[in-house]
Image 1 (cartoon, helix red, strand yellow):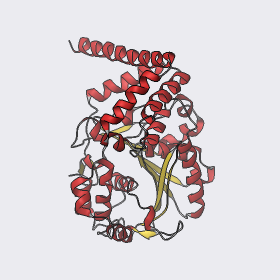
Image 2 (cartoon, helix red, strand yellow):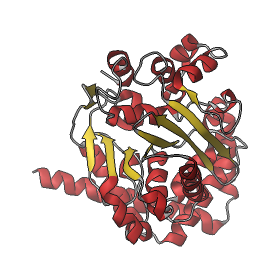
Image 3 (cartoon, one colour):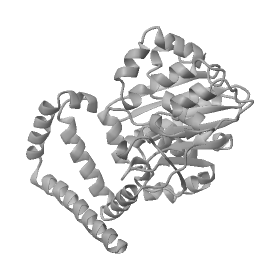
Length: 364
């Protein structure tokens, strides 16, 4: 059973009878990927999920999305089912923001669960090049534009909302939820009961060693799939709940593949491949200082941006033309940048080879 099956099975049971759980949280996190900005009459308007679904599907075709959408493009399928039953239909949605410029990709929304709490959800990385660049920048920076936006958004909406707060996010969205709740105003921190994190990357050393982050750890509920990659990147000081997915490898990052039973996800065990990648990336990043990390990320994305495409989907649609441009621009790099990039790749390969040999030796 996955999240869509859970909706069909559980959707007629209100929160007064069955408490809000980690699967409900995943559903709200998935809804952040739906482009809903055009369906509100004003920035201050709140409408129910039922009404939002109605407005959305007056314009969009469910069957087309069901047959053709991939990964986060399938999020509207959740909206359709959530708008039908009593569990989600009356949740009010509002304060939606979606900001994309040359420096950041940031989106968030508020769900008002009547007589319970306000769920503030941050969108994860979409398919934009700038969104993925921000993810890589986490390796060396603690002051990204998206992180600052998350703090401001949380402080601003908290002033307008009454009652308790719960935060959540998938992928980079979970990272933003942790960052915002750690560094927001104290008056807001005191109202936050829980932070749901779904396969989200960690932080650099400066952030995880901060007093604000340390004090926030007790509120964090983190879930990653067995083959997690994104959720094990960088550093964190909280434990993860490992769960099963119907997919394999990187595709387990998709929330709609996570396996559900009753009111929670099916427990699993971290795979050897995930352990290997986690160890590999940790050792590699330990050998590279922040300045070098920044230089490598800037170089890689300057090459990608040379394709003149704003999303990776656009790059894939013209893959040969895009690839040709990217290769040409690799050769146009200054010699020192070419060497820096090739040295970093060689170092990564050598660490992978050494770890693979150690793992084989330890099994004997």
